[in-house]
Image (cartoon, rainbow, N blue to C red; front, side, top):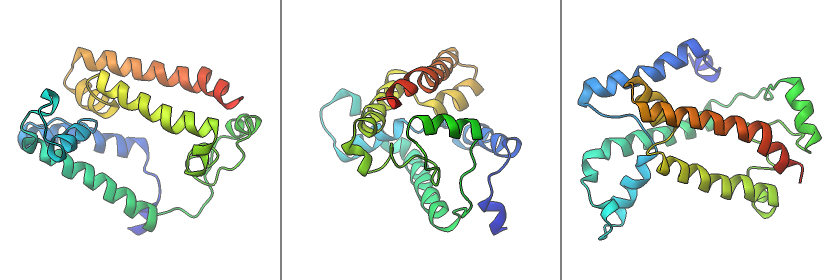
Length: 187
């Protein structure tokens, strides 16, 4: 059982399990799946003010905060108790391409030269962590939800705005991975 949790699950198992959260949440209490609204709930609960954006019954959405806390706890447990000691396996062609940009350590999921406390002092790390984080947060707020809310919940409910948002997320990902990231990494 422990080894089963340690290994990555195939897409045909993990994907349907994620997808089944949609009908489960709808059946349980007509809840919508999503993560990005959690920051709004936290701000509304911790910093009550006269800002209209935070004037709503955040307690009705408290279940979402428990869901997010469960994700954090699960991530902590998996990072500390289910870590795979084997080196990360990536496509050799991708490894060769990344080496041309000076990225040659593939021990972790994210390159330490780009993501980490030490990377904050460098141009590339600042761009990826601070500017990238801001753009992801701004994009999720501007789109009215994040990838999980739109791509999993919104598409399951046949919502047109979620289809547009998901297509834009995909186009942005392709643009970043194939055009902008090589430019940024070349500095």
